[in-house]
Image 1 (cartoon, rainbow, N blue to C red):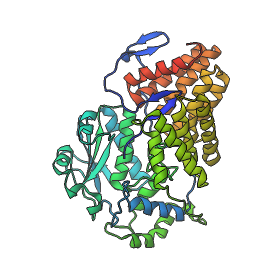
Image 2 (image 1 turned 90 degrees about the vertical axis):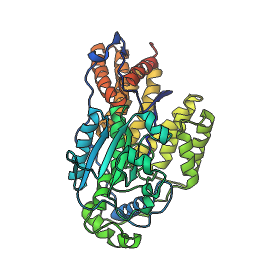
Image 3 (image 1 turned 120 degrees about the vertical axis):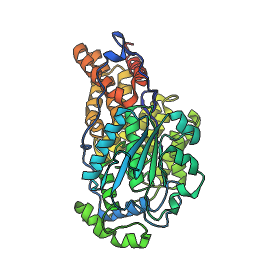
Length: 454
């Protein structure tokens, strides 16, 4: 699984990676040294906003689709998981944020998913090794990868020695005994945390991603950046005593109804019709629309195609508004009116489905930036204040920081200078975690430039 960058404010491309050094940060009062900045914030505990209850019939179909197929489309012949206690160790020069976020994640896995997982002891060979490497080293071997997980290896050198063998082929497994997660250690704390959540979840359980899952990290839309309660249910089902490694699809399907009744008792309700899988044409189009390597013209054409496919198929789930969000991003640099129309459609669609949740917050950043640029501080504040709770609840420091930066600018336009500075300070604290100080400096300058007074 690879992390995608997001365009989060106006025509500003907010990159997901940042160098490890910390240069001075610009402010309206001048240049501020990194030592003088407020400390970085980090999230603790469990994401707060509840996930809608899923009928167990649909949850079982999701489980099968995630557990018996890889992202590439290859089928897995049998179900696999770790059997017995699982330990996690860290290899390489890991920043302190990695240890803190890994401990928090393991605590969640133990309490929410009820998995017997813990940190490996000193000198113990871990079941799962988290290897922190320079991004350049990682991408010299797997170009374009933000982070990934492979089976049967312990650490980077073991992977290099075996990467061209069947040992790292998930389809050859009968049970899981070892795995390694490879992630960059010289990027922002949030990017490292997001990699930990995605890749540790896949090391333990499902290996697929599905665009049709609106409340999951097992989805390439990157809307959710930390494991949700839905994901924890899937992982709890994966380690239910009724399941074991080596079971066939038919054997798993036979016991899943009782498993899902245990992990999701509220889901004992009439099942709705199965959600249609995303056709390859739509998946290719949405990936093309989001690809940073594509031209603006190609991204726009691919986004238009994704919207057309979703519309023609009469989908009533998150895929249509997500395609509209992609269309708005693709149109930003060439047609502002079209971008706004696409964002408005996406926001309406997301709110119809999920209210003022994290999906709508992704759109709100775009609309708030346009309102700020238009010199409309009251509209800007209404949009931001409606979206901020969801950004915090979803533990997305990047969106939280960006919304707060925009809020600070809108308050300054209203003449509330003291409150504006307080909000800006909070934005900086979240931004340090989201991007690191180098990228934070650019973000502040970019958001400052959106104000008509700039």
